[in-house]
Structures are given as structure tokens and as C-alpha cells.
Image 1: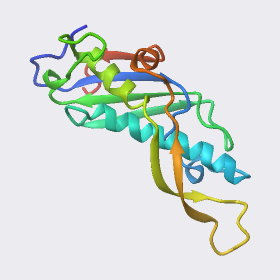
Image 2 (image 1 turned 120 degrees about the vertical axis):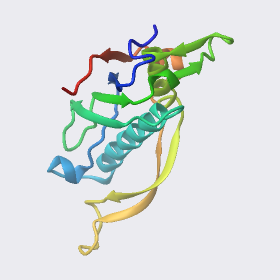
Image 3 (image 1 turned 90 degrees about the horizontal axis):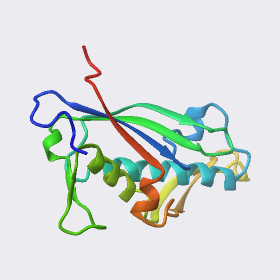
Length: 174
């Protein structure tokens, strides 16, 4: 489906709903900390997936903003079970990508945004991260740098897209 914002001068806004362990809040932002290193790692993996989603959404054109982020299911020990965010693009005519499942076909608008996000969820991500470690015996430092692997959330883009809804909405700014 093509975006309604093509050939317009104002930004196009897309609300993205994703089911899965994706989160943009660190334990400190949430207000209470995990009780174990294992719980901290679970939360950090969901943060890494959020970053992968944002990178994926920036595949052809950087969004003007990523805003209105709402996570569901998040506790101090468990990652979110779903996330909703709004992406605003100032040049929606650049929202296009080749459909790797149907070579020679191109996706545009909200279909392209959905594919960008899906691609961010189908790869393992390995990063060095500073992790809150409540189990440390050194009282002066409760964080350590660890290599963290966030395994892919879905096996392929089709499965990922089945867990993503993208809706273009009218101009959110008056």
C-alpha cells in the first residue's frame, strides 16, 4: 500500500506496533532494578532489539523523530511484551525497498516501513554493553561491561511482519 503522504511537503507519520521483547528503557529509567544479572541481561537484550528496530527504520532515510513510545508488559525483571512507537519521515517518497521475498517488486510507504522494522528483528545482535550487576561483590561499582547477544526475535521477515502493524496517520502537528 502506498503512503498518503507521497509528493507532499509535510512529514508522514507512522505508528508502529510490535509484539515481542523490545524495550527502550534501562533498569534505571524504570525506577527499580533487576535482582539478578540474568534479569539485567534479559532487559538489555530487549534494549538492543529496540536499537536494531530504529536502525532498520533508518534504512533508506533517517526518521525525523522516534516518539510516543509505549511499552507493555515491562517490569523490573521482565522485558516488554510489546511496544508502540511513532516514526516521522520528512521525505516519504524515499520510503521504498525491494521485496526480497518477491524479487523485482518494490514496497513503499507503510509497507516499506514494516519491512525496515522487520529486518531489524531477524538478526542476532552482539554488542559490548555496560550492564547493571546486582550480584557483584564490589560495592563501589554495580556495573560491568559484557558482550551481550540479543538473539533474533523472528526467523524471517514474513514471520516478523506478522507481528508488526504499521499505520500511517494524519499530520500529528497542528
